[in-house]
Amino acid sequence: MKRLLNILFWSVIAAAFIGPGTVTTAARAGSDYRFALAWALLFSVIACLVLQEASGRITVLTGKELGAAIRVRFEESRLGALIPALVAAGIVLGCAAYEAGNLLGGVAGLRLVVDASPGLLTMVAGLAAALLLGTGNTRWIARILGALVAFMGAAFVLTAIRLGPDLVELLGGLAIPRIPGGSTLLVLGLVGTTVVPYNLFLGSALARDCDLGEMRWGLAVAVVGGGVISLGVLVVGSTLGGGLEYERLAAILDDRLGGGAGASLALGLFAAGFTSAITAPLAAALAARSLLGGDGDEKWSPRSFRCRCVWSGVLLAGMAFGIADVRPIPVIILAQAFNGLLLPLVAVFLWMTMNDREFLGDMGVNSTAQNVVMGAVVVVCVGLGLRGLVAAEARVLQATPPGLFDQTALAVARNSRMAPAYRGGFPIAATALLTLKFRPDEAQCGGEDERDMPGPSRGSPSPRVSSTRWR
Image (cartoon, rainbow, N blue to C red; front, side):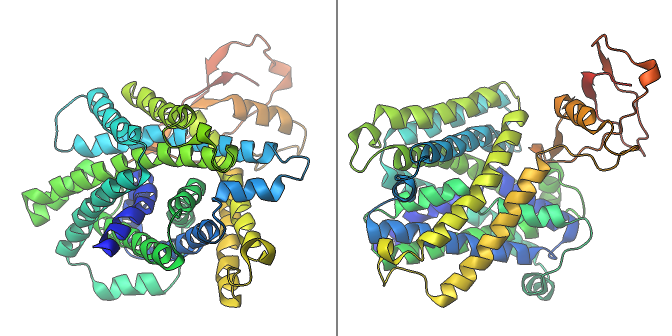
């Protein structure tokens, strides 16, 4: 019984990374490439397990959470107080930016089976999340989330089994790494939606009062179980044969498996969104507490005013955007850029800390094998971080003559406002290609906002760009 409760407790980690983003990315990978990208899911599970175990080991062996370890490491430097504050700001901003997507993802699942207003469903989901978070009991919240994760896993995995996938093809996708043309961003997305910075702080906080074996066992079952659920989503997505629309997917499942399959998909989507809508505010509060509060600081206790302000602020931000049916795209882009920098920094810090004998003792530091595996994971995290930063920044691909109008073109691109790209009803990261022509002899400096001239669409509508017109 104790082991079962431990598994439910650590399932909060799976609840945190299996949200609408993971479901959408895994389903799209299956829809577009069937099982060819399954190996990326396997790698993401290994990477998540390695980094989460390291953050949990710090807490078990030293009694200090990851945030406290960062404070201790930098307390004697000139930026001793600034670094923890910046990391806390990045974690809270990222959680707030994605909270709207979590709530909207859960609502999108419910609307497949319930005919109700999105605003009403968002409000109900947000209030339910607030009631759970208001208890301030991390273990109780974790066990409830564990039960929801088990339900979500049953919905996706049983549906995948009923579809009867080709096991040889599936095992080949897991064992043979390959990147089909055009799939690079999906590969990075499958890893990036599983290995996220705030989960490391969440896992470190959960490791309090655990022994090392108990922590490793619960974490392994939770992360591997989460990977199996993600693989189930990928298999379910493969039935679409290209493109991703949840309404069409639900209809296909109903047609192939019977009337209950679409309902299972809907409830699985709701569970993914709702559990992440709870873990994001919870992780923000726990990260802020460990980064900004001292050991035993009652001002940052789970039921303290400060902790409640953090999680309620994140939750209210998500509810406000969700009820207004507005996607906070600029904030999400900012959060992506900041977290793109934060992930490799936290990963490198973890790697350094796991080799610090003075901090962890001889028995706590990494072995050679652990260093090799963790080093490979850190390299990939750095690559993901660089990719996130590059994707969030405008750049000049080609200019004639080179260098003459580059700064002006970049200013125009950065100030342009575009309708976001959507996939499966959710906003996604996308790259827009703008062609700017400068004609000094026809210069207009009035500053009026005008619509750009339409370019070649190749069958698709041109994106709308609102910016000051330059010629």
